[in-house]
Length: 402
Image 1 (cartoon, helix red, strand yellow):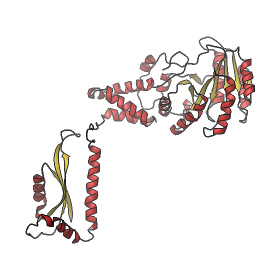
Image 2 (image 1 turned 120 degrees about the vertical axis):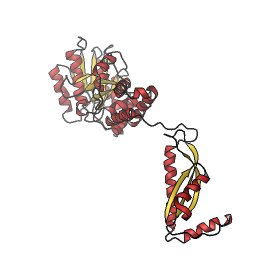
Image 3 (image 1 turned 60 degrees about the horizontal axis):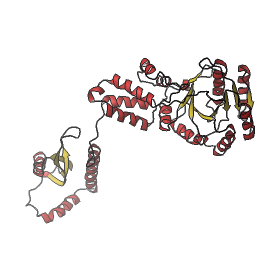
Image 4 (image 1 turned 45 degrees about the vertical axis):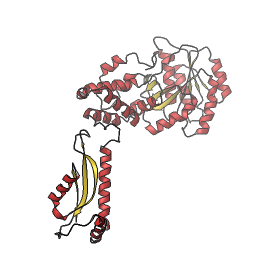
């Protein structure tokens, strides 16, 4: 027993095609209307598809059956075939498979036919995925490419790539850190192990020793990290080396009192104990304690560039209760792919204030800049001169939001 599926413009042509190919042995089981021909879904025409079977054995000619006997004849033929429950199943599954495939190729009634991607679009999308940008971000970029480039322009991959790098830069928000009113209070929160204490020491050194724009600030450090072994000693050692006062507090009242004592200094950097984003109870306690800093304090969230996407999302959600205003990206030197960080922060509308890329104090920290992140894109041919010029003013220490 052999099965067939044939297409033609009309029923008559379909039946003639079946008779010509399979002769009198052929039996047509079903027929339906389909779209045939065309290119990429365009210019197709209405047609007919027939499905049936034929036997390898010669068929004896018989008088034509009346229409009322067609179903009965079909049952007799099916019943004469061994294990023929499979035949109807095969035919049914074959029809369903063809319908499924045609459903993917054919748009819903009234909808536009899906456009096939230009090779440049596919290549850019693959580069974005390789850099671990989240799917929503990749789709956003692909849709923008489709809407803003003609087919001729898409043939110039280098031009499209250069523009996409610029678009990525436009999605990066920055948060300027300016010491305008005294005291400037910055609190650094985040999960365990992201380098908060080292980052605080680096910030204290930048503003209290090196100075910004030639101005050295009067800086103090407060730590509430009295639980992690060696944490208090670590920050106190940094403070001693830099000749910057470090104070340890444990309660809301102690913190409020210490902040009040520092009301005449330029900047106060507050180090906190690392907490798991799943540790809701202790996160709540720490949040209550930090209220002692007052409403003017800026809460910055430390995020490691090595954190996987799902964890980034969870950390941002859980620490949002602290009122985080900006993000400090740490450990940039420990990864080659920053797409997930860029796209997750874009999705959550969070700006970046500082970037750290090593353990050195204070050299391995810098105000966040768009070019600094773009040059980390792997696989993209980044025109450094172009992005430096385009985003020349986009540094987090300047009054620019990106």
